[in-house]
Amino acid sequence: MPELPEVETIRRQLAARIVGDVAETVALLGPRVLRRGDAMSLARMPPERVTRVDRAGKFLAICLENGSALVVHLGMSGYLRLACDGELGHHTQFALTLASGRTLALVDPRTFGEVFLVQEWLPQWPYAPELNGLGIDLLEDPHRVAQYVTDRFHHTQRAVKTFIMDQKVMAGLGNMYADEVLYRVGIHPEERCAPMGDDRLWSLISAIHQVFEEAIDAEGSTFMDRSYRNLEGVGRYYPSLLVYQRQQRRCLLCYAVIERLRYQGRYSHFCPKCQRRL
Figure 1 (tube, rainbow, N blue to C red):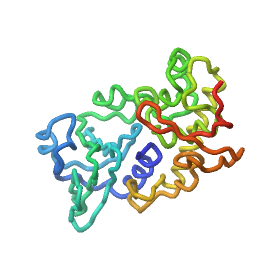
Figure 2 (figure 1 turned 60 degrees about the horizontal axis):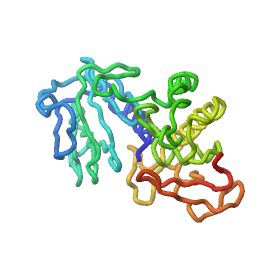
Figure 3 (figure 1 turned 90 degrees about the horizontal axis):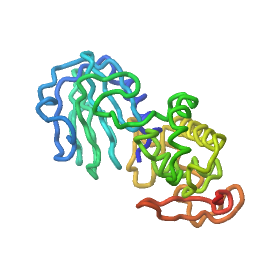
Figure 4 (figure 1 turned 30 degrees about the vertical axis):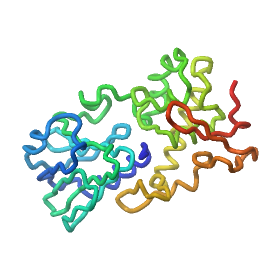
């Protein structure tokens, strides 16, 4: 969290606001925000016009006229704030000053977010050497996604939820939307991938697209703690979640009680009747 729908929402909002402006100066304010590259390259970054804003999985890329890009990952609780007053709030880890006088700040209380400079950014996968390990973006054409992951899916004994959340295979899906996708296709989160056929894999990919499109239309999901917010406020998709964080409540399809189990350090939410293991 934030996942692909939240990051895509921010990308669209950011593109409408900063493309054409000039990125002038960068300030690294948090000790953990720079995890790759070096601070000197960022500090010496010359003023460059913003040409577009891209997204790769859960990464945002502010693309500059010289072909480079400032890449931002929001981590667990980060969000971007575009301010006109230049005032930086508490927990600001990074700030980009624009020629228009505005400041784009990464606010991240838990400090899992990061920012780094890519010298050459490509508009399509694999994007940049720094993201070589990133899998195919899940908003790509579903047939292309299926072509990329089919062999991997049918030759692994990993649990299906672990597989679809692996950012080295399929980029963009996190814990929350993985629960929603698996519920829609009736697959238990601990089901093994290899025994499943092509039909079930295609159902998964189609459901991912459907859930993402719905969530993007609602500008993402914002919980009570407001850990995610977009440039215009909060996302409206949270009330539409069917199983995530609905443990002990009734399934909306069969009225069984939603269960929660802990697997590999994460909680999975599922309906024991609609998502029986094979």
